[in-house]
Amino acid sequence: MTTLTPSYQLYRLAAEQKSAEVTDWSARISWVLGLLVFVAFVYWLMRQGWKWRGSLQSGLPELPATPQGYADGETLLTLTGRYHASTTAGQWLDRIVAHGLGTRSRVELTLTAQGLDVVRPGAADFFVPAAALREARLDKALAGKVLPEGGLLVITWAHGGQMIDSGFRSDHAAEHQAWVDAVNHLAGTAGDHLTSTTTSTTEGTAR
Image 1 (spheres, rainbow, N blue to C red):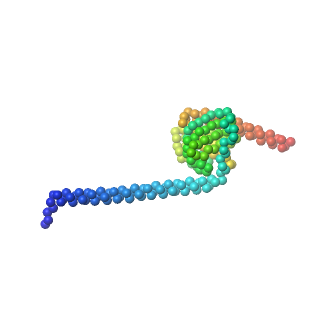
Image 2 (spheres, one colour):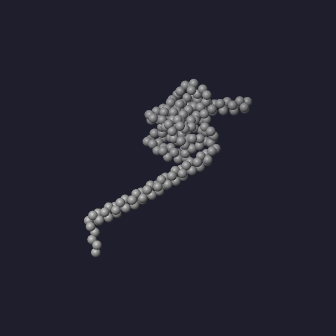
Image 3 (cartoon, one colour):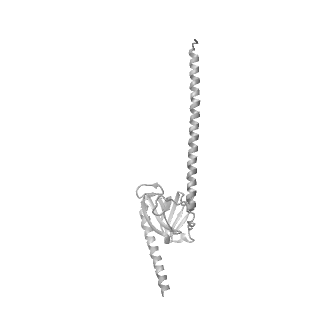
């Protein structure tokens, strides 16, 4: 019977440990590659879902641009913060992605008697005429994003025969209530003016 010397036993033990380390690295690399493939697949599915939703919303007209001379009007309020998302009004999970409305971004809001100017660095700007404003409210959730109570300023507006909720969060959340009051006042004023104009036109036609 062959007796192994202590030095040989140590050499054999070191060789087995080295082999085990190589085996462990191989398993780790395979696991990491599998994880990357899975993440890429999930990302691809999300992209396809985004495109599919965009195709369903292709009937939404192009967003209005800021009218000429808008900057000459009296500024009622301004806000700097984040644009979170837009959804079908009353359906906080039904995200709208058409025309870049699904892209989160920084935002600068300016409110005048003409309407709401939405400037988004790195994303599509848009303008909401005063006549299209419907209401504003404080909320905490929109398009799957949940914030503390009252953490979102949600403005409802009409576009292309559709009612839209757009969510904003100011860098200074204390400003939200002033925006709710101002937008609701402007929406009510614009609505009264529109009703008055329609009534006058109808009466004139009747005569």
